[in-house]
Image (cartoon, rainbow, N blue to C red; front, side, top):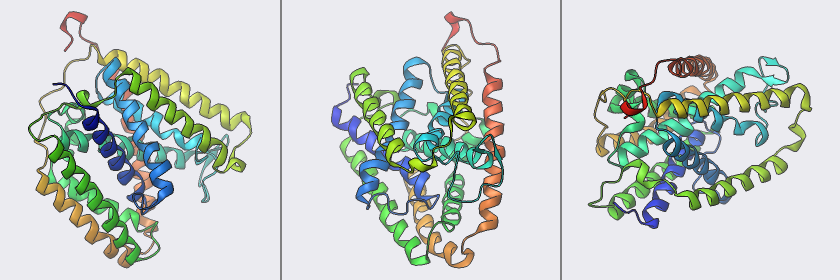
Length: 341
């Protein structure tokens, strides 16, 4: 079915909004991304462009698998090197450094961007806005069930509310953050439903063509150049060893991503999906719970340092386990070309 440019553009805006919400509002880093002109002009496009371009590469040269998704998410997370310099010099005291790299901080950022900036927004966008389910179907069964359950999204809402308590200055600000973000997502999603009524698109249908891809890539490159020069240039470390290690990480994840794309073209098809995607009503309940829990979490937990530390450690372990699992999947035998699905 032909897809109009307007529908594609609206879908990209929704992807950018979802990614910014999970990445920044959950973290308490940017509490009002849709009310701040700077965030709307610079931060929201930064998230949206990463998601759109990376998922387009996945569909153009392969298909979604755990490996392509996880390694793409890791590449996404590496933007925290030259753009924010967080891998080298986070604004807090790094508990463990190696070769100029804040190791725990870097692992946490890879976990956060892989799952909250990339995979979770993709699962939500595909499940809520399209008729396909390839992204979720290629995740481990436990994650399929988690994302396919209303309880999973309610748990995400509570996690985000508690996590945000560390970055919000007051309960009232937390509440305003929820009131200024969740309704925006609801309205954008309603606009999508209204605009596409009677049309069942697959996620792949809504991705940019080659010409649009080049324009979006140029836009992202311009943001990289601007952020890299303008954002905390004094935090840029010497080339050896800190920058060289980051170059090695880029090279490693690019190689793994390319290998994952090649493997995905002949990988066995995923098993049947474990659970249906939650209804719109269930997602609205999760959004409402998030808004109500925000001020309560801030009022009762304050900065929630213990929770944040446990979440960081758990997230770092989870990210390592998913990277290992993704790498291990590339060692499994692929189907012969004529059997590829």
